[in-house]
Length: 458
Image (cartoon, rainbow, N blue to C red; front, side):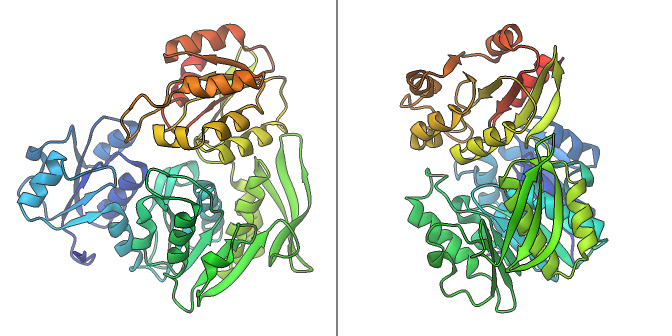
């Protein structure tokens, strides 16, 4: 594998630069003095932002984009060998790094490399810890998988002490990392287009845990099923958090304010550590915050900075994000695209003041929809009304095996008021006519469903 010399900035070209993680890496390297260029299939706000900072971005991917002045290529997991730029780079014998390989090499430049992993909650937990680290004036470098207002985007370039990033298990990308601190929030079935089964996923997280050095730290949810298979052989220090006193850290005296924001007392064994007040909804965020707190305490962050940092965190974009109000209807957007995430979001919504809950759901990828078809119906049945959009294909091709109508059929059998429309315009027209004052409308999914709520607010 090619090794970057970060002391000698060169020209790096990103194939697929518009992705949230790729754009973050590009921005970090740009601020470190590298010449950065890239390409993407479509223009976006992220691409426009990079261009405004001096990055040359080509819309559309073709061989001509691989110019002779490029020194190294970085590509996403979605780029395959038949990609024109990929083939051109190979023909020129240019050094090539995957996004994960580049991110892993970047970590070696910092005293602490903190990786937040898990099937769910990575972006939120990374963002919570970002707030804490900034409140404590640690000057962290941050790469987060969402837009965080506190850092003005998805990346922050700081000093050489702390690098904080999300660590995704898809295609085993996090196995290219060099962490000193790992957090594993949960381990469930997902990305079944890559993993064989849940045991294959557990094995991946086990290998991720083994990456830690002896003086490293693993913060892990004790409630994870078959936890021993993930921590077996780990020589780093292990600290657990969970739902009861069996974990090293746990929450007690949990309650919620009028906005649905959680408050709790954090305990370490039988000793009360601190009282925590969050500014986000949902029980799942209690456990996300505990993971962030443990890491902060292990970094000797003052408790005052932890408490104030968490209180200041009001969420990232697309995580139960309040978008606005339309004729008395509150519109929220959420990135949930896995049944567990949907349940967590809809359970959180019950604590939010409203009348009926409307969910406008856009399934993400055909393989995920097929694998979790019945689970999606069970989770969505927690809503009063469900409106389904077509499946967002992402990296996949529609083979005709599965569609949103299959979810609709199961929901109708459960007696849930369900509607399917093939176009966003039809969905918007229907919602505008049928949502009533004081209702809560959640646009939900990892695709472009967010635009439905934004269009309604216009």
